[in-house]
Length: 582
Image (cartoon, one colour):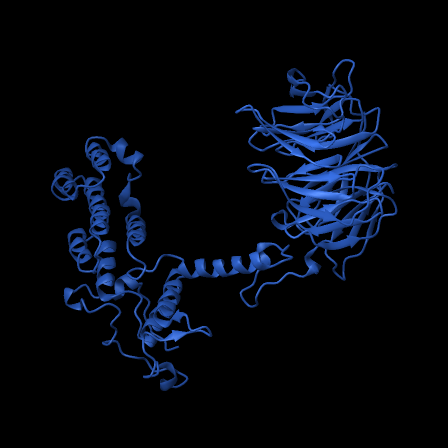
């Protein structure tokens, strides 16, 4: 590319004379520099017209392509490179009229810029008026900033008002004459401090009004590249990599190697069957509960290794489940037909114990505001508590099963629970409406997707069904292959944008399916007992955890040669907390 020794910005390179108003993109007067590699190589071939199509498909117009590249170079601060491309290609980024217009706006020559605006060739009268309004508005405020109040009033009355647009804005401008505070409210105070920046912002606003053929939209090349990467990502069947892994050098394609399928760590601090586990919302912690009546909070370090943070004791019976608060500062734990306990994640202290006279609690969960919790009771009712333990509300008769799973959507509107063995009830608390999901087989557990639009149902017939609940409930996908005959097995959503389904199984394996197609992708051996529960790290698509009757938790990651299975019996000194309610 031929070099051009020009340190001045584009606005300083254009001629201010109106004699320079040549036809758009005409660069016939420019000289072509000689390339250090040879003059003829740097010049466009005479046979190449400006309307040539380029690219293997022949659908890219060369003029548009070159102009967009030139715009990107200037936006990135490569002034001389942008100028050299204009010179060498013979294709201008802007017409001489537009260049003159830009210079006049940046220099604050408002009257001249309005005159030049009408010479750009805009046929839409509304665009001309809107652009004129923006220019004259800026002129108005800069006059006020210079205390030229009478000139500002004249501009408002004789130039802005006759445009006949945005009368509300005109009234706001008139109030600025007598009220400096109004200028602050409108965002035009202290213009003198950053006049150049405010004029650049004006150019950006004007550009949004103009057709893209007149002024290339800002960051257009970046937008096109991002579109191309997004299309590749959406077309990637097994996509499970982070966005920073996408490259411009090759077309994107994920293989099965991006699915966590290698045991990278085994956690062995529990002394009995591990029944439940769940990553925190931010992915920095993992909580597990066990038949040994304990709950363990594990910390996820930046290198992907987990270590024991707290061992929570205090439950008198096996712990069925855990639930993280929306901010991950607190954790609920539910014993089997016992009490619900609330813990401080930082200290490991038990903050409160929730009990209901004569009844056992069998589930727990948070409302989205973090100020209320809910639990299922052995009398088949659902209780709503404030954090201090006051029972705020109780729903009876809506649940005819003692299965523990319940969920609340992130807006707090829908309460979801199993209302009988083969049905799930969705109750709209605001509109007092109900939706019903009915299956032919007994439902053993369910989980709610991160976007609240889908439910994943585990059934006794060794199937998992995905239901869309955004509108009228409909079953959209079925997953088969795992084993379930006696135990409660749980599944989960996971991976990039929750594009995969994972489940435990009684054959000691973890199963992973493609969410959209239902295809079985992986069956992961490693445990020596039934896998009761799985949880996919919401912050790391390459981390999956599984809990088993073999007393262990396995952390699954990518199959990298340098990763070795780490036996973590306690991962350091166990921080044991007594869990007595305060």
